[in-house]
Image 1 (cartoon, each protein chain N blue to C red):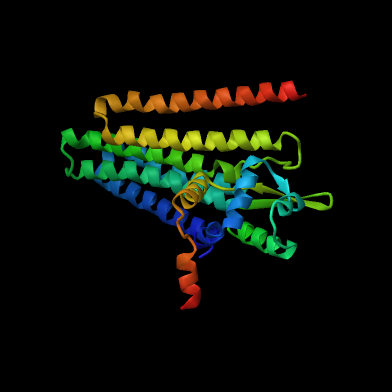
Image 2: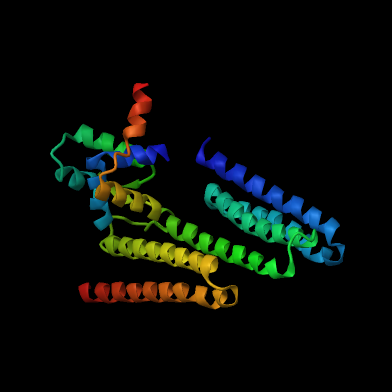
Length: 97
Length: 190
């Protein structure tokens, strides 16, 4: 569960999930929506995949991502967005100590 | 512990609990031994059959743990009744707990729909529509399950069974309507 909190703590990753809620998208299409480098985006995708929130499949030369969030995880994301909860605080505290 | 380890551990504990309770019931209420024999054999047979299927073992084991927990709940009430710890008036409490457990199973099932029922080809044109229907169905199942649980918790026991059907019927109708709308949309786009 801590990997889910870590994944949902970042606003970029939350926006990726919000975009994937509309439809499955290729890595390139998703990266175009953000003003960050491709390696950074790849790192965000890796965190989301590790948390089991997205799923990747190959389509020709591109990778297509789709949402794999349970209802509880989606509700948690909605709560984090609405109330502005800092879900990553515990994770960061653990890393610094 | 890994997710697979958790699933196996939970399934083993829940099935062991069912078996222990079946033995206890066998000793406490020998006149109904055929029931306890069925209870004792059901989970091992179901689990063995499920393990033979070529499907994700982790989700199978979580399902086995779920089913065994509900069976153990029912057996727990039979044991308390057999030991005279439950007055006849309290027997409705057993029904209530089983109703709540069934509602929670629906919540758990709905919660996992988006994780398990992934569309096979995410690059296909209809993938977005299929995903939307799945997510909608998942939310409806979770909310209907929660409503069902709430009814079994709060409603008078003699009305709970009938009332608890309402959110499920409404939920299934909403899902059917949503699927119908998605099909019409697909036809009009084709």
